[in-house]
Length: 350
Image (cartoon, rainbow, N blue to C red; front, side):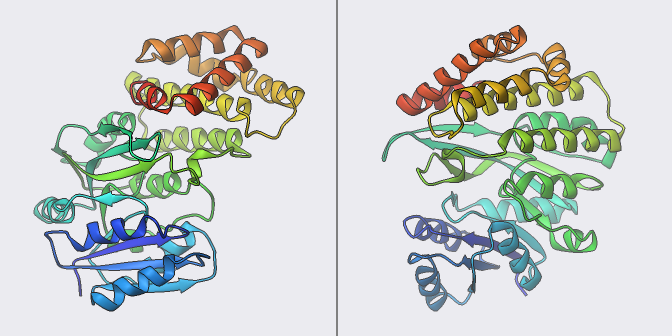
């Protein structure tokens, strides 16, 4: 039985899966299995995965009809035999000390989850990218309550949102019947379920995982229908989590409200951009809906934006001017398309 089960859903990533798999097989820690789930890929993704399995007994491939990454991960979890789970995307890559360092952190401290920093590599053409480091100071939390008091700092640095910067104790996941929900952006609800009642969490300030953003066909690079409704749902989840925790301190509240306001700005850009099929009148009505939401008023009253650019963006939201906010969204979309490097830096420093 391997110590770690690395779970990798894969769909239409024939140009990237080789780098991802090689970065796993090159780990200095050797006691793992790699389960690749070919999610009905129409390209050579599945064939490439089979080639890796033929050359290394630690690699196992599951082929299934296209059902989405959440169900692919759940199927792999059901068949995994490791003491810990690590979730990896097939178009990202990891540095060679990742599994070993996280395993040591988890074993030495009896952790349910070991959390590491990570990099966001935002490509704005084939060879140029902006690299953003996201991490927090190393700490092993002595209790559930200590983790909850400090969680706002981890949320603020994106440490608790993705599944792929963490080592999870498999029995903890199984005992609590936690699975990835069948929805887009399934990472957050999975992690909220994991951390809702978790006992033992440890964090390292080291970063190993490279999340690749801005691949042309990736989830984040296209118009998302229902994005605003999804962000509203996520905000409700976050508020419910903090209510369950009984954490109502000013720092946690400010993080929650600033997070919401920043995501409203992203929703405005999603609607205002040229990929959105809505008419201009429909765009204006959608933005009006966002501006008239009482949740936004609460967020803008509490949020303390960290950058000058975000302060300006939130000031425009406070005007409640549909025309001004639509113009703002169009400008953000223009910068995103025309000057990807500048947009990546502004986003990283928001």
